[in-house]
Image (cartoon, rainbow over all chains, first blue to last red; front, side, top):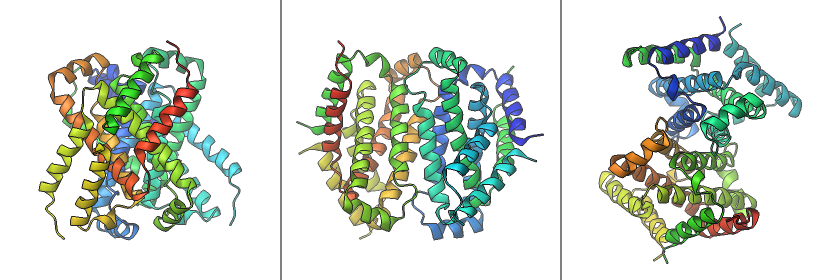
Length: 106
Length: 106
Length: 106
Length: 106
Protein backbone atom coordinates (compact mmCIF):
# COMPACT_ATOMS: atom_id res chain seq x y z
CA UNK A 1 0.00 0.00 0.00
CA UNK A 2 1.01 3.56 -0.57
CA UNK A 3 2.93 4.52 2.51
CA UNK A 4 1.26 7.87 3.14
CA UNK A 5 -2.18 6.31 2.63
CA UNK A 6 -1.18 3.78 5.29
CA UNK A 7 -0.22 6.52 7.73
CA UNK A 8 -3.45 8.35 6.97
CA UNK A 9 -5.57 5.30 7.84
CA UNK A 10 -3.61 4.64 10.98
CA UNK A 11 -4.00 8.25 12.13
CA UNK A 12 -7.75 8.14 11.46
CA UNK A 13 -8.07 5.06 13.64
CA UNK A 14 -5.84 6.59 16.28
CA UNK A 15 -7.97 9.72 16.51
CA UNK A 16 -11.28 7.82 16.44
CA UNK A 17 -10.20 5.41 19.20
CA UNK A 18 -9.41 8.34 21.51
CA UNK A 19 -12.31 10.61 20.55
CA UNK A 20 -9.73 13.15 19.38
CA UNK A 21 -11.37 13.98 16.05
CA UNK A 22 -12.90 17.00 17.77
CA UNK A 23 -9.39 18.42 18.33
CA UNK A 24 -8.13 17.69 14.83
CA UNK A 25 -9.29 20.88 13.19
CA UNK A 26 -7.23 22.38 10.35
CA UNK A 27 -6.08 25.22 12.59
CA UNK A 28 -5.05 23.00 15.51
CA UNK A 29 -3.16 20.65 13.22
CA UNK A 30 -1.43 23.50 11.39
CA UNK A 31 -0.33 24.88 14.77
CA UNK A 32 0.94 21.47 15.84
CA UNK A 33 2.81 21.12 12.55
CA UNK A 34 4.38 24.53 13.07
CA UNK A 35 5.45 23.60 16.59
CA UNK A 36 7.08 20.40 15.37
CA UNK A 37 8.87 22.25 12.54
CA UNK A 38 10.21 24.51 15.28
CA UNK A 39 11.48 21.53 17.29
CA UNK A 40 13.16 20.15 14.18
CA UNK A 41 14.98 23.38 13.39
CA UNK A 42 16.00 23.77 17.04
CA UNK A 43 18.08 20.58 16.69
CA UNK A 44 20.25 22.33 14.08
CA UNK A 45 20.33 25.93 15.26
CA UNK A 46 23.82 26.12 16.80
CA UNK A 47 25.65 23.53 14.69
CA UNK A 48 27.62 24.29 11.55
CA UNK A 49 27.40 22.06 8.48
CA UNK A 50 30.54 20.07 9.31
CA UNK A 51 29.39 19.37 12.86
CA UNK A 52 26.01 18.24 11.55
CA UNK A 53 27.62 15.91 9.01
CA UNK A 54 29.78 14.34 11.72
CA UNK A 55 26.89 14.16 14.19
CA UNK A 56 24.60 12.49 11.62
CA UNK A 57 27.22 9.77 11.13
CA UNK A 58 27.38 9.08 14.87
CA UNK A 59 23.66 8.49 15.29
CA UNK A 60 22.04 10.41 18.18
CA UNK A 61 21.39 13.56 16.17
CA UNK A 62 19.95 11.48 13.33
CA UNK A 63 17.58 9.77 15.73
CA UNK A 64 16.39 13.07 17.18
CA UNK A 65 15.92 14.52 13.70
CA UNK A 66 14.09 11.36 12.58
CA UNK A 67 11.77 11.74 15.54
CA UNK A 68 11.02 15.39 14.77
CA UNK A 69 10.66 14.69 11.03
CA UNK A 70 8.17 11.94 11.90
CA UNK A 71 6.11 14.37 13.97
CA UNK A 72 6.04 16.87 11.11
CA UNK A 73 4.97 14.15 8.66
CA UNK A 74 2.24 12.80 10.94
CA UNK A 75 0.66 16.19 11.50
CA UNK A 76 0.99 17.02 7.80
CA UNK A 77 -0.72 13.78 6.73
CA UNK A 78 -3.48 14.28 9.29
CA UNK A 79 -3.96 17.94 8.33
CA UNK A 80 -4.19 17.05 4.64
CA UNK A 81 -6.71 14.32 5.47
CA UNK A 82 -9.07 16.54 7.45
CA UNK A 83 -8.84 19.17 4.68
CA UNK A 84 -9.63 16.67 1.90
CA UNK A 85 -6.19 17.17 0.34
CA UNK A 86 -4.16 14.47 -1.40
CA UNK A 87 -0.72 15.71 -0.38
CA UNK A 88 1.16 13.18 -2.51
CA UNK A 89 -0.70 14.30 -5.64
CA UNK A 90 -0.11 17.91 -4.68
CA UNK A 91 3.61 17.22 -4.21
CA UNK A 92 3.98 15.60 -7.64
CA UNK A 93 2.08 18.50 -9.21
CA UNK A 94 4.44 20.93 -7.46
CA UNK A 95 7.56 19.09 -8.64
CA UNK A 96 6.26 19.23 -12.19
CA UNK A 97 5.68 22.97 -11.96
CA UNK A 98 9.16 23.43 -10.50
CA UNK A 99 10.73 21.34 -13.27
CA UNK A 100 9.23 23.76 -15.80
CA UNK A 101 9.96 26.86 -13.76
CA UNK A 102 13.62 25.99 -13.20
CA UNK A 103 15.00 24.32 -16.36
CA UNK A 104 17.86 21.84 -15.80
CA UNK A 105 21.30 23.41 -16.07
CA UNK A 106 23.53 20.33 -15.88
CA UNK B 1 6.24 2.16 -5.75
CA UNK B 2 6.12 3.68 -2.31
CA UNK B 3 4.94 7.21 -2.87
CA UNK B 4 7.48 8.94 -0.63
CA UNK B 5 10.31 6.90 -2.16
CA UNK B 6 9.09 8.13 -5.55
CA UNK B 7 9.19 11.75 -4.42
CA UNK B 8 12.64 11.20 -2.94
CA UNK B 9 14.03 9.91 -6.26
CA UNK B 10 12.41 12.70 -8.18
CA UNK B 11 13.86 15.32 -5.82
CA UNK B 12 17.33 13.77 -6.09
CA UNK B 13 17.18 14.01 -9.86
CA UNK B 14 15.80 17.52 -9.68
CA UNK B 15 18.67 18.71 -7.49
CA UNK B 16 21.35 16.89 -9.51
CA UNK B 17 20.10 18.29 -12.83
CA UNK B 18 20.40 21.85 -11.49
CA UNK B 19 23.61 21.43 -9.50
CA UNK B 20 21.62 22.34 -6.39
CA UNK B 21 22.93 19.56 -4.17
CA UNK B 22 25.39 22.08 -2.76
CA UNK B 23 22.47 24.12 -1.37
CA UNK B 24 20.58 21.16 0.05
CA UNK B 25 22.26 21.06 3.43
CA UNK B 26 20.26 19.92 6.47
CA UNK B 27 20.20 23.47 7.83
CA UNK B 28 19.07 25.09 4.57
CA UNK B 29 16.34 22.50 4.08
CA UNK B 30 15.14 22.79 7.68
CA UNK B 31 14.91 26.56 7.21
CA UNK B 32 12.99 26.11 3.95
CA UNK B 33 10.64 23.65 5.68
CA UNK B 34 10.06 26.15 8.48
CA UNK B 35 9.32 28.91 5.97
CA UNK B 36 6.77 26.73 4.18
CA UNK B 37 5.13 25.72 7.47
CA UNK B 38 4.80 29.45 8.10
CA UNK B 39 3.12 29.99 4.73
CA UNK B 40 0.72 27.15 5.46
CA UNK B 41 -0.31 28.51 8.84
CA UNK B 42 -0.68 32.01 7.37
CA UNK B 43 -3.53 30.69 5.19
CA UNK B 44 -5.53 29.90 8.33
CA UNK B 45 -4.54 32.66 10.72
CA UNK B 46 -7.60 34.91 10.56
CA UNK B 47 -10.31 32.34 9.78
CA UNK B 48 -12.46 30.60 12.35
CA UNK B 49 -13.25 26.88 12.09
CA UNK B 50 -16.63 27.41 10.42
CA UNK B 51 -15.20 29.73 7.80
CA UNK B 52 -12.44 27.24 7.06
CA UNK B 53 -14.93 24.39 6.69
CA UNK B 54 -17.00 26.44 4.25
CA UNK B 55 -13.92 27.68 2.37
CA UNK B 56 -12.53 24.15 2.02
CA UNK B 57 -15.79 23.08 0.38
CA UNK B 58 -15.58 25.92 -2.16
CA UNK B 59 -12.11 25.04 -3.39
CA UNK B 60 -9.67 27.99 -3.55
CA UNK B 61 -8.53 27.67 0.06
CA UNK B 62 -8.09 23.92 -0.36
CA UNK B 63 -5.91 24.51 -3.41
CA UNK B 64 -3.73 27.02 -1.59
CA UNK B 65 -3.40 24.70 1.39
CA UNK B 66 -2.61 21.76 -0.90
CA UNK B 67 0.13 23.84 -2.49
CA UNK B 68 1.66 24.78 0.86
CA UNK B 69 1.30 21.23 2.21
CA UNK B 70 3.11 19.99 -0.90
CA UNK B 71 5.99 22.38 -0.25
CA UNK B 72 6.26 21.20 3.34
CA UNK B 73 6.26 17.55 2.22
CA UNK B 74 8.86 18.11 -0.51
CA UNK B 75 11.31 19.83 1.82
CA UNK B 76 10.68 17.24 4.52
CA UNK B 77 11.34 14.33 2.13
CA UNK B 78 14.48 16.02 0.80
CA UNK B 79 15.72 16.89 4.30
CA UNK B 80 15.20 13.31 5.47
CA UNK B 81 17.04 12.04 2.40
CA UNK B 82 20.15 14.18 2.88
CA UNK B 83 20.20 13.20 6.57
CA UNK B 84 19.93 9.48 5.85
CA UNK B 85 16.55 9.26 7.58
CA UNK B 86 13.67 7.01 6.53
CA UNK B 87 10.85 9.33 7.51
CA UNK B 88 8.10 6.79 6.79
CA UNK B 89 9.71 4.24 9.12
CA UNK B 90 10.19 6.96 11.71
CA UNK B 91 6.53 7.95 11.39
CA UNK B 92 5.27 4.39 11.92
CA UNK B 93 7.60 4.02 14.91
CA UNK B 94 6.20 7.24 16.34
CA UNK B 95 2.58 6.15 15.87
CA UNK B 96 3.36 2.93 17.70
CA UNK B 97 4.89 4.80 20.61
CA UNK B 98 1.88 7.13 20.71
CA UNK B 99 -0.54 4.18 20.67
CA UNK B 100 1.14 2.89 23.82
CA UNK B 101 1.54 6.28 25.43
CA UNK B 102 -2.11 7.26 24.92
CA UNK B 103 -4.30 4.15 25.39
CA UNK B 104 -7.58 4.10 23.44
CA UNK B 105 -10.52 5.52 25.37
CA UNK B 106 -13.39 4.76 23.01
CA UNK C 1 8.21 56.69 26.60
CA UNK C 2 9.20 53.08 26.65
CA UNK C 3 9.36 52.03 23.02
CA UNK C 4 7.43 48.77 23.35
CA UNK C 5 4.75 50.49 25.40
CA UNK C 6 4.46 53.01 22.57
CA UNK C 7 4.00 50.26 20.00
CA UNK C 8 1.45 48.57 22.25
CA UNK C 9 -0.69 51.72 22.46
CA UNK C 10 -0.44 52.33 18.75
CA UNK C 11 -1.50 48.74 17.98
CA UNK C 12 -4.45 49.01 20.38
CA UNK C 13 -5.65 52.14 18.58
CA UNK C 14 -5.04 50.54 15.20
CA UNK C 15 -7.17 47.50 16.07
CA UNK C 16 -9.93 49.55 17.70
CA UNK C 17 -10.21 51.94 14.73
CA UNK C 18 -10.77 48.99 12.36
CA UNK C 19 -12.96 46.85 14.63
CA UNK C 20 -10.25 44.18 14.44
CA UNK C 21 -10.11 43.40 18.16
CA UNK C 22 -12.42 40.46 17.45
CA UNK C 23 -9.67 38.90 15.29
CA UNK C 24 -6.85 39.53 17.75
CA UNK C 25 -7.22 36.37 19.78
CA UNK C 26 -4.11 34.76 21.30
CA UNK C 27 -4.32 31.88 18.82
CA UNK C 28 -4.71 34.08 15.74
CA UNK C 29 -1.86 36.32 16.80
CA UNK C 30 0.41 33.37 17.61
CA UNK C 31 -0.32 31.98 14.14
CA UNK C 32 0.43 35.34 12.55
CA UNK C 33 3.68 35.57 14.54
CA UNK C 34 4.65 32.10 13.37
CA UNK C 35 3.93 33.02 9.75
CA UNK C 36 6.10 36.13 10.01
CA UNK C 37 8.93 34.18 11.64
CA UNK C 38 8.68 31.88 8.61
CA UNK C 39 8.97 34.82 6.22
CA UNK C 40 12.00 36.09 8.12
CA UNK C 41 13.81 32.76 7.98
CA UNK C 42 12.93 32.37 4.29
CA UNK C 43 15.08 35.44 3.55
CA UNK C 44 18.14 33.58 4.82
CA UNK C 45 17.48 29.99 3.79
CA UNK C 46 19.79 29.66 0.77
CA UNK C 47 22.52 32.14 1.72
CA UNK C 48 25.73 31.27 3.52
CA UNK C 49 27.11 33.46 6.27
CA UNK C 50 29.56 35.32 4.01
CA UNK C 51 26.87 36.11 1.46
CA UNK C 52 24.59 37.38 4.20
CA UNK C 53 27.32 39.59 5.63
CA UNK C 54 27.98 41.09 2.18
CA UNK C 55 24.27 41.42 1.42
CA UNK C 56 23.59 43.17 4.74
CA UNK C 57 26.24 45.77 3.86
CA UNK C 58 24.61 46.48 0.49
CA UNK C 59 21.19 47.26 1.92
CA UNK C 60 18.28 45.45 0.20
CA UNK C 61 18.55 42.30 2.33
CA UNK C 62 18.77 44.40 5.47
CA UNK C 63 15.61 46.26 4.48
CA UNK C 64 13.70 43.04 3.83
CA UNK C 65 14.90 41.58 7.13
CA UNK C 66 13.98 44.79 8.94
CA UNK C 67 10.51 44.57 7.47
CA UNK C 68 10.05 40.95 8.56
CA UNK C 69 11.57 41.61 11.98
CA UNK C 70 9.10 44.49 12.39
CA UNK C 71 6.18 42.17 11.61
CA UNK C 72 7.40 39.66 14.18
CA UNK C 73 7.76 42.39 16.80
CA UNK C 74 4.34 43.89 16.11
CA UNK C 75 2.53 40.57 16.43
CA UNK C 76 4.55 39.70 19.51
CA UNK C 77 3.72 43.01 21.22
CA UNK C 78 0.04 42.66 20.33
CA UNK C 79 -0.08 39.01 21.43
CA UNK C 80 1.53 39.88 24.75
CA UNK C 81 -0.94 42.73 25.22
CA UNK C 82 -4.06 40.63 24.66
CA UNK C 83 -2.64 37.97 27.01
CA UNK C 84 -1.89 40.48 29.79
CA UNK C 85 1.85 39.80 29.51
CA UNK C 86 4.60 42.39 30.01
CA UNK C 87 7.04 41.00 27.49
CA UNK C 88 9.83 43.42 28.42
CA UNK C 89 9.67 42.37 32.07
CA UNK C 90 9.56 38.74 30.99
CA UNK C 91 12.62 39.26 28.76
CA UNK C 92 14.66 40.83 31.57
CA UNK C 93 13.63 38.00 33.90
CA UNK C 94 14.74 35.49 31.28
CA UNK C 95 18.13 37.16 30.79
CA UNK C 96 18.69 37.05 34.53
CA UNK C 97 17.91 33.34 34.65
CA UNK C 98 20.22 32.73 31.70
CA UNK C 99 23.03 34.71 33.36
CA UNK C 100 22.83 32.34 36.33
CA UNK C 101 22.33 29.23 34.23
CA UNK C 102 25.30 29.91 31.96
CA UNK C 103 28.11 31.49 34.05
CA UNK C 104 30.47 33.83 32.16
CA UNK C 105 33.56 32.11 30.76
CA UNK C 106 35.54 35.08 29.48
CA UNK D 1 16.34 54.17 28.66
CA UNK D 2 14.51 52.69 25.75
CA UNK D 3 13.60 49.18 26.84
CA UNK D 4 14.66 47.38 23.68
CA UNK D 5 17.97 49.27 23.63
CA UNK D 6 18.47 48.06 27.20
CA UNK D 7 17.86 44.45 26.21
CA UNK D 8 20.19 44.86 23.24
CA UNK D 9 23.06 46.04 25.47
CA UNK D 10 22.45 43.30 27.98
CA UNK D 11 22.46 40.64 25.25
CA UNK D 12 25.70 42.04 23.79
CA UNK D 13 27.38 41.77 27.18
CA UNK D 14 25.92 38.31 27.73
CA UNK D 15 27.33 37.01 24.43
CA UNK D 16 30.72 38.69 24.89
CA UNK D 17 31.17 37.32 28.42
CA UNK D 18 30.63 33.74 27.16
CA UNK D 19 32.51 34.06 23.84
CA UNK D 20 29.22 33.26 22.10
CA UNK D 21 29.41 36.02 19.49
CA UNK D 22 30.77 33.40 17.08
CA UNK D 23 27.44 31.52 17.33
CA UNK D 24 25.25 34.59 16.94
CA UNK D 25 25.10 34.65 13.16
CA UNK D 26 21.94 35.91 11.45
CA UNK D 27 21.06 32.36 10.33
CA UNK D 28 21.55 30.78 13.75
CA UNK D 29 19.54 33.48 15.46
CA UNK D 30 16.73 33.27 12.88
CA UNK D 31 16.59 29.51 13.47
CA UNK D 32 16.49 30.02 17.23
CA UNK D 33 13.73 32.60 16.82
CA UNK D 34 11.76 30.17 14.68
CA UNK D 35 12.17 27.41 17.26
CA UNK D 36 10.90 29.69 20.03
CA UNK D 37 7.94 30.82 17.93
CA UNK D 38 7.17 27.10 17.59
CA UNK D 39 7.30 26.61 21.36
CA UNK D 40 4.98 29.58 21.83
CA UNK D 41 2.39 28.28 19.38
CA UNK D 42 2.62 24.80 20.89
CA UNK D 43 1.23 26.22 24.14
CA UNK D 44 -2.00 27.14 22.36
CA UNK D 45 -2.42 24.35 19.80
CA UNK D 46 -5.14 22.24 21.46
CA UNK D 47 -6.99 24.93 23.41
CA UNK D 48 -10.04 26.82 22.19
CA UNK D 49 -10.42 30.54 22.73
CA UNK D 50 -12.61 30.18 25.82
CA UNK D 51 -10.20 27.76 27.46
CA UNK D 52 -7.31 30.10 26.74
CA UNK D 53 -9.17 33.07 28.23
CA UNK D 54 -9.91 31.09 31.40
CA UNK D 55 -6.37 29.69 31.56
CA UNK D 56 -4.82 33.15 31.16
CA UNK D 57 -6.84 34.35 34.16
CA UNK D 58 -5.57 31.48 36.33
CA UNK D 59 -1.89 32.20 35.72
CA UNK D 60 0.20 29.15 34.72
CA UNK D 61 -0.55 29.44 31.00
CA UNK D 62 0.20 33.14 31.12
CA UNK D 63 3.56 32.44 32.75
CA UNK D 64 4.49 29.84 30.14
CA UNK D 65 3.44 32.17 27.34
CA UNK D 66 5.38 35.04 28.93
CA UNK D 67 8.44 32.83 29.04
CA UNK D 68 8.13 31.84 25.37
CA UNK D 69 7.32 35.42 24.32
CA UNK D 70 10.46 36.55 26.16
CA UNK D 71 12.57 34.03 24.23
CA UNK D 72 11.14 35.24 20.93
CA UNK D 73 11.84 38.87 21.87
CA UNK D 74 15.39 38.16 23.01
CA UNK D 75 16.34 36.34 19.82
CA UNK D 76 14.61 39.01 17.73
CA UNK D 77 16.48 41.84 19.46
CA UNK D 78 19.80 40.00 19.15
CA UNK D 79 19.15 39.11 15.48
CA UNK D 80 18.30 42.72 14.67
CA UNK D 81 21.45 43.88 16.46
CA UNK D 82 23.84 41.60 14.56
CA UNK D 83 22.13 42.61 11.28
CA UNK D 84 22.43 46.35 12.00
CA UNK D 85 18.64 46.73 12.12
CA UNK D 86 16.73 49.11 14.39
CA UNK D 87 13.68 46.94 14.92
CA UNK D 88 11.74 49.58 16.84
CA UNK D 89 12.15 52.09 14.00
CA UNK D 90 11.18 49.37 11.51
CA UNK D 91 8.08 48.54 13.56
CA UNK D 92 6.91 52.16 13.66
CA UNK D 93 7.52 52.47 9.90
CA UNK D 94 5.45 49.32 9.38
CA UNK D 95 2.55 50.57 11.51
CA UNK D 96 2.51 53.78 9.50
CA UNK D 97 2.35 51.87 6.22
CA UNK D 98 -0.43 49.69 7.61
CA UNK D 99 -2.39 52.74 8.78
CA UNK D 100 -2.38 54.00 5.19
CA UNK D 101 -2.99 50.59 3.64
CA UNK D 102 -5.97 49.79 5.85
CA UNK D 103 -7.96 52.99 6.45
CA UNK D 104 -9.91 53.17 9.73
CA UNK D 105 -13.48 51.91 9.47
CA UNK D 106 -14.83 52.81 12.90
